[in-house]
Image (cartoon, rainbow, N blue to C red; front, side, top):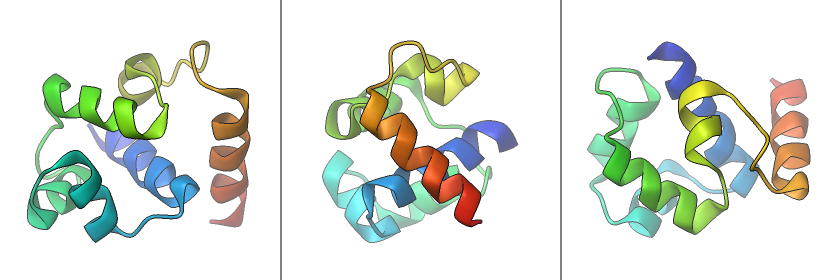
Length: 85
């Protein structure tokens, strides 16, 4: 679960969104999103689907770090954020 949480943080940052904005975009409470990023709670697949719908990410990437179905620009943005950390 920590690896999934780390990918959620990278994705949010690559989108240029705050935790508040990510939560708003997918229709959940800020504390719920924060718990996903901190690996306190696992992200349910239904919520992960919403994340995919608003960001362009794939479930394969969120859960298994497989980038095959990810948009090239999004992969690049995530890599930039990752290098900056």
